[in-house]
Length: 78
Image 1 (cartoon, rainbow, N blue to C red):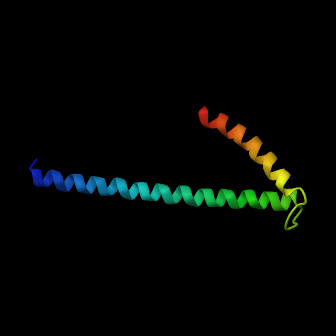
Image 2: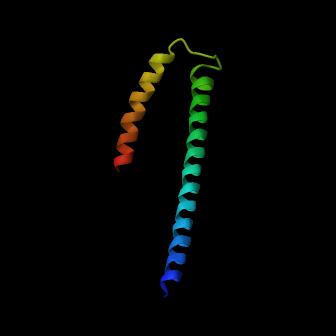
Image 3: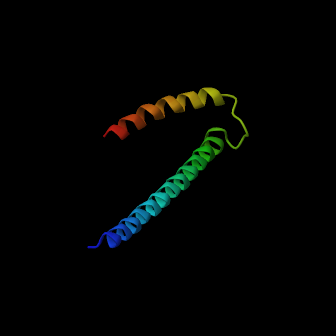
């Protein structure tokens, strides 16, 4: 293969990879925004019974964070 063809092939492949990486990043960002929205909805609708702010909000958030961190650390190590 001639050097020029090799360079062209390299550039096309690199562009395909970079495009795919961009798609992956956007997909992950979209999924995480959706997950955070669902989490917020759960807290408001289920735990706060639709109220704007629960009286125990800070304590609830600290407890949720502690429990979720320990569970998520274990599942990510597996």
